[in-house]
Amino acid sequence: MNRAIEIVRDADLTDLTTFRLPARTAELAILHSPEQIAVLPPTDKDQLVLGGGSNTLFIGNWPGRILLNRLSGLSFEDRGDDVLVTAAAGENWHQLVRTCIDRGLHGLENLVMIPGSVGAAPMQNIGAYGVELSDLTEHVDAWDRVEQRPCRLSRKECDFAYRDSRFKSGEPGRFLITSVTLRLSRRFNPDTRYASLRDALDQAGIDQPTARQLAATVMRLRRHRLPDPARLSNAGSFFKNPIVDEAQARELLSIHPDLPHWPMPDGRIKLGAGRMIETLGWKGKFIGDAGVYARHALVLVNRGRATTADLLALINTIQDSVEREFGLRLEPEPLIIGG
Ligand SMILES: Cc1cc2nc3c(=O)[nH]c(=O)nc-3n(C[C@H](O)[C@H](O)[C@H](O)COP(=O)(O)OP(=O)(O)OC[C@H]3O[C@@H](n4cnc5c(N)ncnc54)[C@H](O)[C@@H]3O)c2cc1C
Image (cartoon, rainbow, N blue to C red; front, top):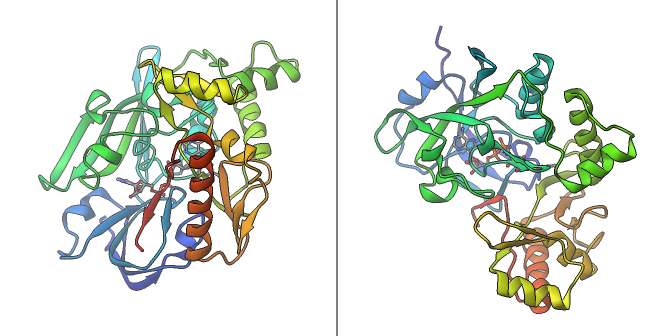
């Protein structure tokens, strides 16, 4: 049976994002099924979808409507050695990874413990330890707000790129993702190409990891490097690693030979933003209650009552200092709304 849409006026958003800046929304509509999308009461206000709020920051009140995605459900379809796993957009990503490992379905191990919802995963093509969502995506189902109808986008139509997709930058706001279908394998073929993952397995004396061992190793690495948003408010990596052409990379690396860098499939070079921030002495520094995590310079944290002013001052000062030293302006990774 279809549940009624819950609509809350003047709702508090603070605990709906993992950075927990104080903010309110004029209207919060809580969605439990895709059918509810078509029958939402009309509004002339802007609408924004929110899943787990781990990649979104509100730097002011939102005058429109927030659609809080709580769609649930999982299904599995055999395709020989593969299984198509369809997860509703409101499912928790980490739980989905664990469920698949428990059922002997492989491919997601390196993406364990990424906070947030399944529906947000295609937005920035989530990735970790050498694996990206796009490697496993079969298709994405969504509500097309332009055509006002459900639609299905193949992996190619999602225009996935590094921390980017059609949903994020091609046509932002057009698609409300309702489910994601992944092609997983019954055969376990561990991806251990990522250097720090391989080192951690070596140190643990594991040569041929099982799926559980691989996921446990990723979780150990993540716990060491990243603060748990339930204990210390944060939005994960705060700045994107900048991507530059080869000539610019060569020039920068001649001055900063220790700067981590990775070749991209298009020949450009991705540079380690965290090391840039660390080199400039930012680790553990705070402006008010907003600061740089002491163990990982790419992560900004709210140690209690950070205000929007604290955070904006911190972002700007870091961006300015990196630009002065490296000639690059770092771009925030999370979606920053309002202001
Ligand atoms: C501690 C920590 C570690 C992290 N580690 C990683 C990592 O390793 N790799 C990585 O890639 N990311 C990482 N992130 C970022 C974050 O987990 C991902 O971006 C995640 O996919 C966000 O999910 P969410 O549901 O919380 O998104 P939200 O913040 O709720 O939303 C993010 C964006 O997606 C849009 N959106 C959400 N749901 C939908 C939907 N159903 N349809 C259309 N648009 C939608 C929102 O409007 C918003 O623009 C990390 C974050 C934290 C806090």
